[in-house]
Length: 74
Image (cartoon, rainbow, N blue to C red; front, side):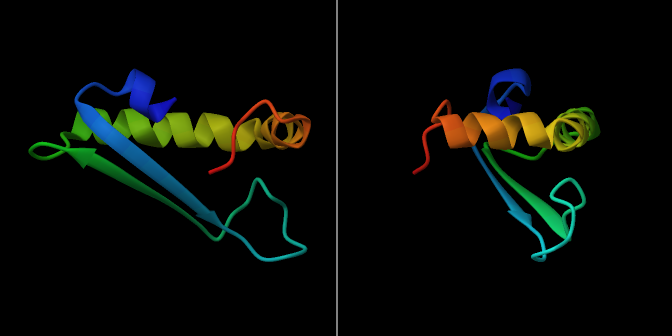
């Protein structure tokens, strides 16, 4: 979604770190690594943050989609 909605990105990788037993929607860290020619502007950074926050709110739905095979894994 980040790649599709934020203009100018060649590629984007997202990592989410959590602790077993903690709520999945409250990760210890979310790291977004965009590949872009030049630098990200504040508007793009804000777009990325909004997308991450929205997806964390809907993480249970995403987990169910992963389990059902809707999203390929590596």
